[in-house]
Amino acid sequence: MATSTDKASTRDRLLDAAMELFYRDGVSLGVEALCRSAGVSKRSMYQLFEGKDEVLAESLERRAPEYRRRLGLDAETSAPPRERILSVFEQLERSSAEDGYRGCPFLSALVELKDPEHPASVVALRAKNGLLDAFRAEAERGGARDPELLARQLALVFDGASARAGAKADTLQGLTTSTVKVLLDAAGMEEHPAS
Amino acid sequence: MATSTDKASTRDRLLDAAMELFYRDGVSLGVEALCRSAGVSKRSMYQLFEGKDEVLAESLERRAPEYRRRLGLDAETSAPPRERILSVFEQLERSSAEDGYRGCPFLSALVELKDPEHPASVVALRAKNGLLDAFRAEAERGGARDPELLARQLALVFDGASARAGAKADTLQGLTTSTVKVLLDAAGMEEHPAS
Image (cartoon, rainbow over all chains, first blue to last red; front, side):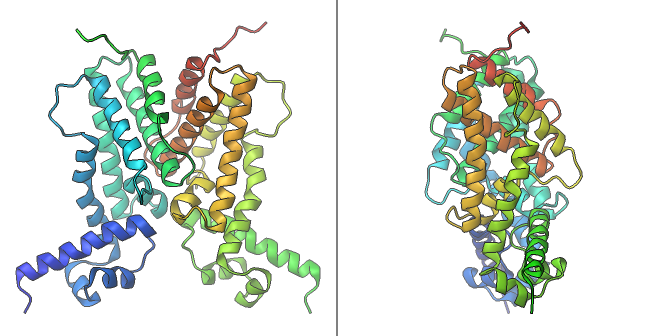
């Protein structure tokens, strides 16, 4: 009989494989290929999850904290809001140059699923809204004229950049940060000389 | 025996169905469902096309001229470059509010295929580069400081906007045009009073 530790490791293996494969090959990947890659029987999968939709949703949920951490959204920092926003885009530029980069995993899932009510779309939208909220908080802290508008503009640039880099339509080097600086300046979040 | 007119109409039916279904449901849609919806036998399909990849590539190719036309990229106009660029984004805002809008069909195909060498990705990239070229031409005509940078920025906003609207992560009303105005101003393509 499977112990609870076995179950946990089966679950981990499945979710890790799902995170990697759905990102690399798309969400249309079948249960068969997923289980094979995870080294898990379909029977075991169906004991742990209702089906592929749930595996996909949970694999995205599992990815969210690491995504936030890499972008520096949760870091304790005394950096000024302008620097903090720019550092998100510097990280995006770095990530996009890595092998195997295929864009923002949450935006890709939304584009591929084409159904905002799919359980995985709900998770993906929550992650995207988390980024929007972080931008809005920094915009407010930095005294932007219209923090909501600036946050939406930054999300637009972030998603356009990640989609174009993932699709190999452009590289981002120097593109996103220069664009973001223009938007920050126009919103009244100009650079201040170090005091 | 099938006449050449029959063949043309079978071909048209298949490509029209492909254009609609791949956009609505994604490129992972199977040959079976495609042929059923087009009212064409699989045998007939394989007489006309090598396979699904070719149908997908040709259906995107077929969509490109209408896409350019809707965005006003080929229109004869004496409108100043700034107005011409803004009108592309006004059209994007209008399109994105329509029922069944799922983002730019070319960007979606690229995001879904995850393979820049897929024949349909090649077609999609060509369409996206056509938009970039149009932006660059207007930027040059309008005396932008760095036409290449401005064109890439506009493509970034266009793709971010279409992806976010398609994914229901945001509406575009007033968002894209206000963002584009900031970028045009910063590039030295300010609004001039009517002379």
